[in-house]
Image (tube, rainbow, N blue to C red):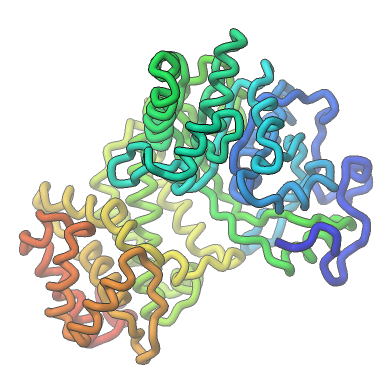
Length: 506
């Protein structure tokens, strides 16, 4: 995190602030609503780059159209960096939307308050207990839920969970803050807020509901029953690429503003937010600014996992092996672009069961077109190596579950099998030029053992990797309709290289 007091090299020394909004260049969009009249209606736990480019940007756009009590108090659960950077700027920051056509800037004004939880937990609880607060949103990453990802249950032995149960008025975790604030609201006769997870987790609302209810039950069975009965936790699906802000980004944005912005966020034009419409205490009219309010978010989650994430993994492994550093570099190769589109059209897309468009469902063709445009965006340098991380956790939902559906329907899996084979070739640990690959994965040590024991023999490598039941389950390794095409594709990748194999497949 850059220092909030030292401007980037060559940047203006004057700091972005509310008093300077009127002096911004005409090309820079800025709040047109009265920030002083805003009340805090949303508390966000885990304020960071993604939230500022996504949920806050939607809310800011809404306030331009329909002014309401929807200011946001942002809470950092650990690092003070966001508070330190934005507090001297009156909570203002810039969203820079980048694509091949250039960069468009907007200063966001709906972030009214910035807190650091461990410095003053009582101040955080006070904000959460204000009558004006109707929603608490979260982006705390999977670790922040203090649960067992395999079962979705609260990890009751987690040291921070034990601390929060023993010290409810000084919580450390998001779950502890939610429970204590809800307990205080209950005691004060205030309606509970809605808890809206915006983390990139399947069934995120169901997950937080299960964990929160169990935590509350451990505090007091009657409190647990009240939480289960009254607290809404809608599921949501979020999507926007927000790379880490660099020094060059800060300098470029500050120069365009004519003022120093210590921590802008850079993102892509595409943005999506699908939310189950369950908000008993009320909500912003987010649907007026592009949020999709639906009865069931699960079909949209599956669509994203299989079309976006499944394609991303395919691009990452094959692209890396072919020597491409970024997604856009990979997609600039016509053969890769054709393979990815055919993967969506002919294999992953047909496994989806979306509501019809006339019943509020997604336009699948439009969505796939938008994905191809995003993948080709050269302004966001999304590295293939970065997407390739943690494959043993990503493969089941992104590639293996659609494979299971295809096999159950008696349909071919040629492109999906190639993607799985590319992962196997990648985790073998050496690229096509003989250089080591930095394989980052929870099972990295086991993968390295398998790679060493199989010594580049594709048949032995495939057989050994199929033995990872945590990844492939018991069913797929026993099905030759799966193992045969994956092994054949892996042999070709070793013998011919990724570019040649993709060109033939496309």
